[in-house]
Amino acid sequence: MIDCRPVLDRDGVTISDVACRHGAGRGEEPEPSPGHAIVFVRRGCFVRSADGVEALLDPTVAYCTNPGEEQRYDHPHEHGDDCTVIALDEASAARLWGDAPLPAGPLYTTPAIDLEHRLLVAAAGRRQDAHELYERAITLAAGAIGRRDPVRIAAGRPSTDRARRRLVDDAREALAAAPDRSLPELAERLSVSPHHLSRVFRSRTGHTISGYRLILRARAGLERIAGGERQLARLAVELGFADQSHLCRVIRKQTGHTPAALRAVFAR
Image (cartoon, rainbow, N blue to C red; front, side, top):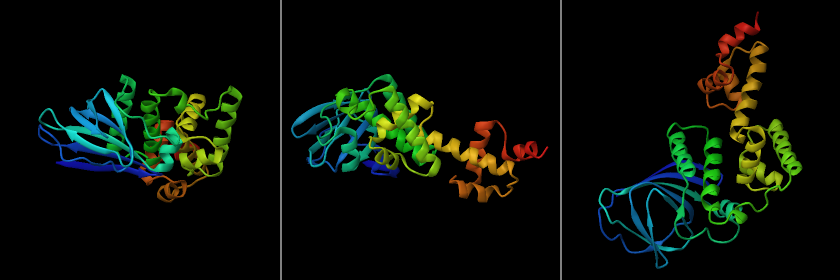
């Protein structure tokens, strides 16, 4: 009756597509919540009872779970529901919200948050870059729970333009040396939380960190192609692309030309 399909498991964050086909009626007996998570409802309506407090949940809200909460799910209607679960390990939850439990009760989501949630699901279905999915998931989670306490979610954020510029420059410098550094690794190196680094970086450069990483890889590829490199499969592996097709897609998207066409242009 419950189908849970993980679509990402990276750096302490797991994204799962959960489909429940429970009929109308009371759910099973309460059981402990497995851990920290932010759950976004895509379809359906159900009631969650957690530690004796009931909340009606539908596609206008998200909600959080915390380790050990006694929870039960009841269903007022037939046809079940579909949700997206962003589960966080202890370290990821602490970076996002501090040491306190994630907020209780429904988190009413804006149209922008709901759209970003659905775009994340679509991107996961297309098996997009894991770095990008992680960054989008953390940004989405921060946006949802930040509506409950914007001050808490903004804690540690660089407060001046100069500090933000320096943060972005430090991140770019680190990526230039090692493009494969993940967002959590960068954030730890720079002593900020991943979602704040992602937000500040995008606000100043116009790119997510995962998108910026692809730009660096593509431009390294262009340099090699301009120098006469013909083994695209080898080049893709050396630069960190998934395969030759991924390399070709990224270069074509960024330049409007295939690697073969660019090779001919460089050879003129």
